[in-house]
Amino acid sequence: MAYWLFKTEPQAFSIEDLALRPEQTEPWDGIRNYQARNLLRDQVQTGDQLFIYHSSCPEPGIAGIARVVRGAYPDHTQFDPESPYYDPKSSEENPRWLMVDVQLADVFAEIVSLKQIKANPALEEMMLVRKGNRLSIQPVTPEHGQILLAMAKRR
DNA sequence: GCCAACGTTGGC
DNA sequence: GCCAACGTTGGC
Image (cartoon, rainbow, N blue to C red; front, side, top):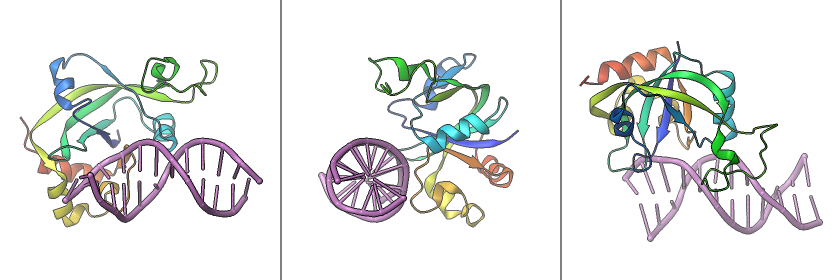
C-alpha cells in the first residue's frame, strides 16, 4: 500500500463532494499531464491511500484521505467533445489519458494546511513543498504519510 | 532536435 | 491580479 497526494481545486471538486456520497466510488478524471499519467499507469494501485490536497483556494492543504478502488483505465472525458478535458488527438483505440476510481476514507476535522506542512522540518523533502513543483499526482513516502496522518485531527 | 512563444499551475 | 516555474507546441 502506497501513499499519494492528489491535488484538486475545491471550487471544481472537493473532498466535500466525495463526502456527499461516501459509499460511492468516484472517477478521478481530467489528468492531462504525462508525468501524472505515467504514475497512474505504472504505480498507482487499488488499495493505495490518497491525501486529498485542495489547491488554489483560501486555505491550501490536505483535507482528508481517499482510497483507490480501481486502478488505471481510459479516461472517457478525453473522447467527449463537450468535455473541457476533450483531447482530439486521442482515440478509443489508443487512449492517451487514464483515470482511477476513488472512494472517501476520511475527512480531516481540520485541514492540514500548506503552512503547517512548510513549517514542519520533517516534511521539507516532500515534493509538494519543493520549489516549482506543480505535479498534480505526487508520491508520498511512508514516513511522510505517517507524519501527515499524525498531524491530522480525525473527524 | 532546438528553442521561442505560449499556456497552465498555484501560492501569495 | 501578479508572477515564477514549469510543460507544451510548432516552425525551422
